[in-house]
Length: 307
Ligand code: SF4
Image 1 (cartoon, rainbow, N blue to C red):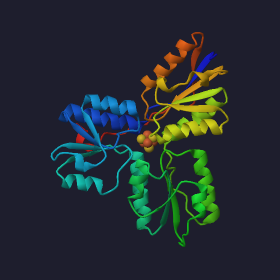
Image 2 (spheres, helix red, strand yellow):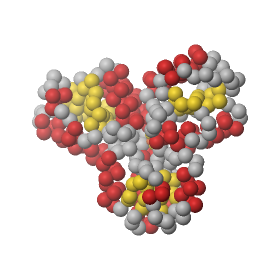
Image 3 (cartoon, protein in one colour):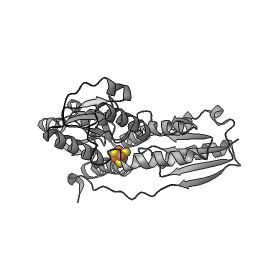
Image 4 (tube, helix red, strand yellow):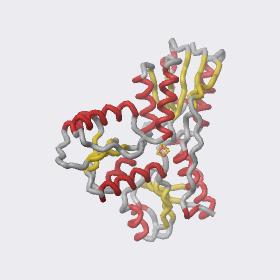
């Protein structure tokens, strides 16, 4: 019987996601339907379906887009050849990459120019890792075991990371890198972004007060999956749910205090639906917020949409 729901704060949309969704909506308003988007603009099914209803068309390959149309590149960042290839095909390109992903791309290019061998800690196959590892040659590692298999003989080595990693897992991998390459240079500024860090910090606090944590987010969302892992590492059961429809009633058996949070690509309407659903099942339950930190980050729009 759930007697209390505690909501993590911060949760949900980060500045990069807000900007990327704004970019698609503004482009639809300004340039009309259809607006093509290469890859899901952010990794959330609800957001993608909502934008599709408004006139966005999502494609994986720019070759699917008829000449003369607008194409928006997703928040996760793209390989450097995507934009010139799209322009060569006669497409008008707007890049909605998060500026914090661009920061990692810029670092990668700078350290490559300076002669560093770059090790990138990230998830193979994730859109952000695909875009970042295409900037310059680099070695991708996902686990501490991968570090053992690296054979690098270089004086100048640096590691960079994906923005949405688990802080705890990444620390283990960095420790393994430092044991294997004692002269490795740290990334100059933390690459794991403020939104990932804050949401994981809030989940750790939430785990101290709850019996179960539901993370609202899609399975494609790296930062949402990391929140589930963070909760479990902190010793509390946790499940990822795309919406209220994915909640299994048996999860709630023996749960007195339920924690709820959401990934950086999740609109709060989905969290509210989950709260309403739990409240229907457990009408006596109260709701409160665990306020861990405030966020006031905003990003300017791409130049094509600034008025
Ligand atoms: S999670 Fe971080 S890096 Fe990704 S879009 Fe949001 S702010 Fe940018």
